[in-house]
Length: 445
Image (cartoon, rainbow, N blue to C red; front, top):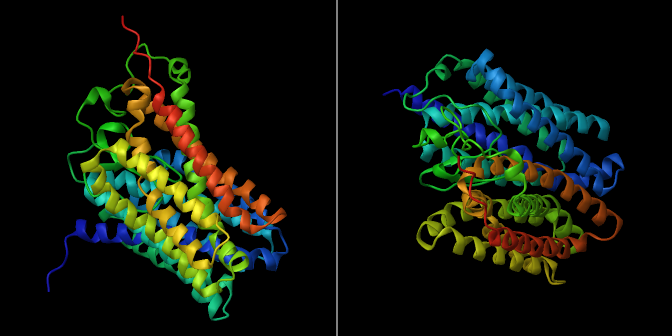
């Protein structure tokens, strides 16, 4: 029996790591109604958990570049995965919401470092195709999460066991990382070690020449659009490593003065808010607002995340043939259609259909918005603007779903559909406004 080469073994381990990394993101939406009822807190309190997790994720992602240099990829992955396992164990045993919030912060710290460490390694060792599919496996994990939580609730084990099972998976992964520390030291030649950065943790990928951009929630984009964000580039002058990403004389003020920057940032914030809010509150809408059983609602939420995964793979191929602009416009319109279906006071199956339409349509939006950044603001501003957009996405992922949770808790969960519809229309308007803007040419000397 032949032994798989170390690179293949590490590739498979990276895939499993991203499945495990996605699991916690799929647990909260199904588990939150039980959690909030047990702790006696309103629906909107989930925003505190989201915000704490986002703070931890962004913090560790920024610091990962420094810790990578000292610890190495293998030790960073082993330690961060162990930290995530401990945080999930804390979830399973939390006596109060305050403890849960603290665990969310710790989980974010571990998750951000895992993301950054794996992508820093993969950008130089796996190549663009495997980078894409590594993130597709994250989508698989997010889709499995609701099924795990649904199974625990359906059998009467309770929400805590959903987190306990996921904690055990993370612990097994931490052990695997620890046993392969030495193997992670080798990196395939041909790509310099990139600076670690927070990366896409949303489902799916484009199955062609794409690399990952930093994001709390996001996607995959073409190499040429994101030089300096963890992927190989052809032009050293355009790369963020080994050359200047921004032409001399282009000031930060020049970039921030462009209206397209802020319309684009708004589009990113609203898009991620729709994606997160739909996954987070769909279970509550289906069970309390549409009379769907908890088991069926859990499967439906899993189907929503699964449609994002499938949609990103399928529509990545379609975008190559039809063009980025055409697919992006169709996807934004499809998101609005899905939101309207969710908003209709109709039987539960219509709401489920709306979730699937919304997820499938939303799948390519983040990567295509990122890919078209240079078209909106000019290539000389693109690298800076991508950073602004990713920051806006992180803010949108935490603040807007939190505010929506307060709204639903104070009024009715049936307002989720109308709220998503308003956000979808706002996304269409923000994108149209950004697309109409033209960037000023860089100053010449």
